[in-house]
Length: 74
Image 1 (cartoon, rainbow, N blue to C red):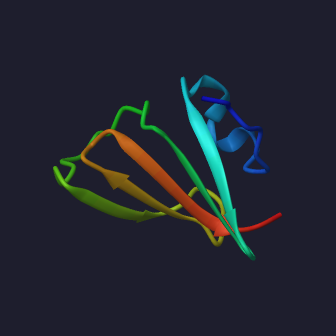
Image 2 (spheres, one colour):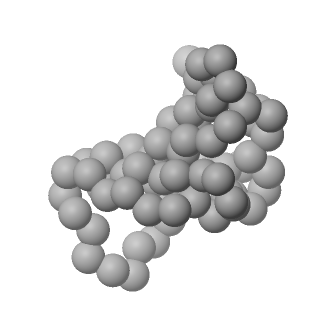
Image 3 (tube, helix red, strand yellow):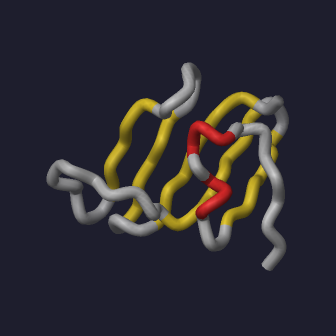
């Protein structure tokens, strides 16, 4: 599996993510990576949606392990 560099910047801390890949679909990007952050709240075991760190981003946490970050393409 190839790890791609993305335009999400260092605010996401993705340089520490073990595996990630970026999918671009037209004007949208979807970054998929393992969630490595410590969450200090109760997380839904199946799916958890939240606003992203940067404006216009949506984070979807699947099964407490996989993080999908949805945004506009850069």
